[in-house]
Amino acid sequence: MYKNLFGLFTVLLCVICLIMTIECFRKRRWGLGVIFLLNAFTNLVNSIHAFFGTLF
Image (cartoon, rainbow, N blue to C red; front, side, top):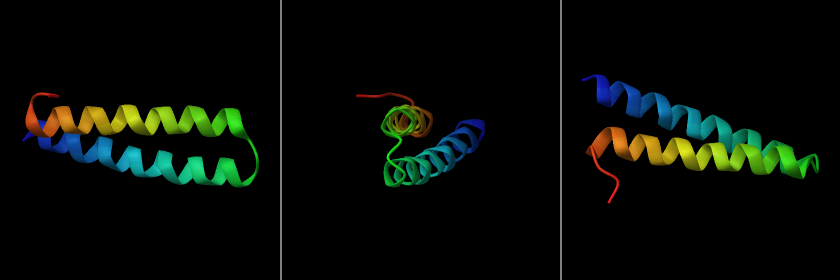
């Protein structure tokens, strides 16, 4: 149960980071956009790990 909640929370954070990435790229803040994009990728990896228990 806790893994599913953690997985849903990290998916929510991933979506928020993707929205922030789009906004940063629109305002031409490339560095901040890249940081949010890397954070979104990390949250996606964490959510896969939480749901399935393994990465590969």
